Structure formats: structure tokens, C-alpha cells
Image 1 (spheres, rainbow, N blue to C red):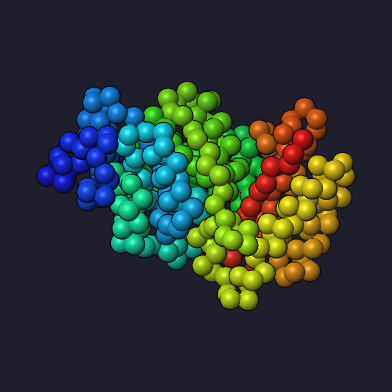
Image 2: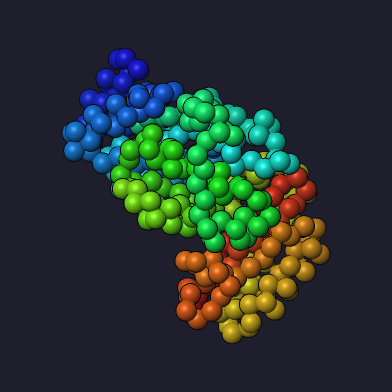
Amino acid sequence: MGRARDKLLRRTPDEPVSRIQLDVARRMVAVREAIAHWRAEGLRVGFVPTMGNLHAGHLSLVSAARERVDRVVVSIFVNPTQFGENEDFDAYPRTFREDSDNLAAAGCDLLFAPAVEEVYPYGPAGTTRITVPALADTLCGEVRPGHFDGVATVVVRLFNMVPAQVAVFGEKDYQQLQIIRRLVKDLAIPIEIVGAPTLREADGLAMSSRNAYLSVEERDVAPRLHQALQDVARRVAGGEPAPAAEKAAWQGLQQAGFRPDYVAVRGAGDLAVPVPENRPWRVFGAAWLGQARLIDNLPIPD
């Protein structure tokens, strides 16, 4: 990493990020060396794992990390172990140049962009796998078998490769966030997990890389998923039984042209069917609209 790395490591905490050219590391040893240098200087390090194809929601995670730490590392790694049999890993958008420019402007200090061989030295099929019971088998895990095993596996590997003190994940992928919180506690990984609020378009649609798959007509319809979940939250907060509110939302989404995977009220902590003991509750929804699979969730007021 040479002079660029040396300049990066000499930056003082109050020096403007805009004066620093974003450095890119391809190997774990380079990331660990940079972080060891920062931590020896008493600086706190944050980490934002991504699969690239970044949008404003991703960049808001970088901002959330910068509020808590002195240095921010972002990874871009399209993880093959979280793609199912009918999901095209090769077709996932790779926009590395644009992502790098946006991360530099957002205040990222170091970009980690490893090859598959760096993350999985024995190959994706031969790697040790992490499973988080119960949390990974419901909601998206039920319709995408094995997906969260792939997520948990790569996150544990990345945490070991990028020894930061704080990691930031978006609440749009709330099930993923809860799975990561559980595995960190269960495996005693010394990192603080921060959930950042979902960033939305003006009409309420949750920002997502998947939104790029929407046609112009579908984009006009897409906010109805958010509206349907808002309606469920209002009904359940008002005392209506969750199954009735879920059914009404499901039917409304179908009438709007969606193909719902689920609309479900669950405990915010355990993702189980709601009972008084697992309050607060959240409402979760996932539905296909054309070629895009959209997900969203909202808290339900007690």
C-alpha cells in the first residue's frame, strides 16, 4: 500500500477526509496492519461490510460509523455463499469505480476489496459454516433456505479479517441485523453492533440496490409495500389481532401487482410470533414486484 497507506496512517483525527485519497486493500494482512497502526495510536475503528453497488443508504452507514469512531473501513465483497440455487451470483451488479468515489466522498478511510480466494481459502463450498438457529429459519430464511448461513459465515470471517471495535448495519435488513447481534454475543466476538435507521425515498420506499430492477411503472407502485406495513402497524397498535392485519396487507399487495413472500408481525428481539412477552413488535414484509424482490420493516408502537 506504500506511500498512500503511510499518508493515510499519519492523518490526525481532525484532518478533513477530503484531503485524503481513498486507499484500497486487497489482502487481509494489509487491513490488519492499517488497523493495528490506528489502534496503537488510540484511535477507534469502525467497519461497514457491503456487497457494493452502493446507494445513499449504504453511505448513511458510513456516516453513522464516523459519528462513533475515528477511522472507518468499508468492505466490498460479493459473497457467493449467500446466493441460492436460483439466484445469479454472476449477475450481481459490480460498480467498483463509482463505489470507490462515493466512499471517498463519504469519509471512508480504507476500502477492503478482497477476492473470493482471500475470504474463502478452501473455496466457498469447503468453508466452515456458521448457523444461527431459530433466527435464520424464519421470514426471509424460510423462503431463501441457507441464505443467512452464508451471511453469518461471511460476517464472522470479515470480523476476523477486519478487527474493528464497531460495525454498522442497516435496519432495512432487520432480520440480518438481529442474526449478527446474536452470533456476536454467542461467539463472544469483541465488537459493538450498531443498527442504523432505514433511509427512504421521498415516497417512503426503502433505498435498496434492488430498486434498480424496477421499471418506471413498477417504481410508482413500489412504495405501496411501505404503506401496507404502515397500515399493519396502525391496526395492531390499535388492538387488531396481527393475523387479520397481515391478511389484509397481503391481499392489498396482491391487488397492487405484488407477489408477496410474507407479511408478518414478529417480536423485535426473537423474531417469533408476537406474544406479550416478546414486545416490542415489528412488522416485516417481502414481496416481488416484477424482477425486484423488495423487503421492508417497521416498529409497532406499544
